[in-house]
Length: 173
Image 1 (spheres, rainbow, N blue to C red):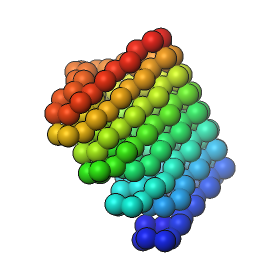
Image 2 (cartoon, one colour; image 1 turned 180 degrees about the vertical axis):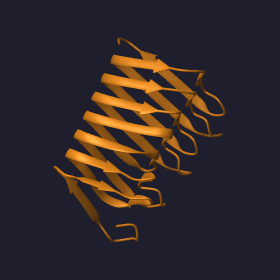
Image 3 (tube, helix red, strand yellow; image 1 turned 90 degrees about the vertical axis):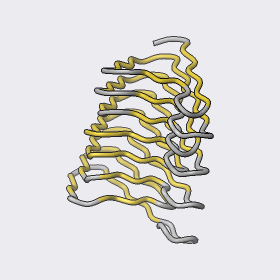
Image 4 (cartoon, rainbow, N blue to C red; image 1 turned 180 degrees about the horizontal axis):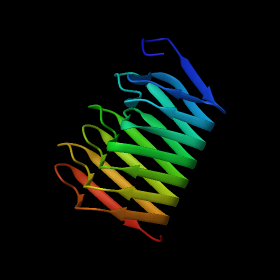
């Protein structure tokens, strides 16, 4: 569901899919409770007016990039492997949210608020970043990262407030 008024839902509870292209969820949800999915880029709510959700409670999601525009990613189990970049709030005017309670996210880099605004709530799990992590990479962006538990490993620079307003609230982990 990318066009205005349309809705698309993908439910994966077992098996696997593999695509050399991208998957787009504009309005609707991508629900992975088992099995595995592999595609080049996973796009959640990338167009103005879109609102979508990624729910990963088990299973695996792999790809080159994970983009969350005006949507929400709920990662409460499973494994997410992104070889190059994870972007939350990557569409101008968007409000991207990631709620991470368990499981793992491995990414080459993470941008919270790359063009829009981002909120990350991390209360468990493991995040491993091979390169840089940016909070508010884009000008006029605002990002807030709340970490109360879990593990975050960064392979290079951690930049809070790169070109916008970034906040890191660390209370545990």
